Length: 196
Image (cartoon, rainbow, N blue to C red; front, side):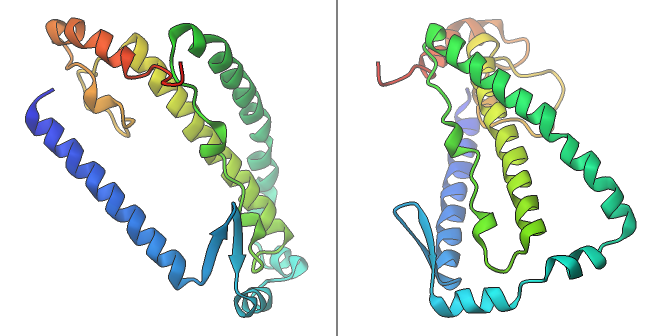
């Protein structure tokens, strides 16, 4: 990997850290904190949240008819999502130990907390649980897939790839056979479970 690419990756990492710090500062502005994994709001904030909640019947009555008609199509996707979750989790449990790849912690990607917000009604909370599961699952699957790709095929594509995962920039350039052969063992070793 060229030093220019390494420098750019380092700058991106620094910007991500800066963004995380800004988001943490915003957490203070919104007057909540996390204590032993639980989100804690001040009593006054909880009362304001509850006052801003829309009643379920008003929420449904205010929805466009087409929105209501499409809801079953949205929620039907939970079946293939659950199957994907099952198959990828089993795949990782069986294969990653064989390849000595560190396992992806599911709980780091699938986080359920928005349903605890007092300003959401029951339908909105259900929607938040669904979206947290769907998007968290896709991120979890992507991380498992990216580790698999780094182990088996750490080569960039010839064409520009939209939305490449974070591991992708470290892969060998398309057509650079020497870099592929030189870096393959190192890239695989980077995936090893350090608890061994």
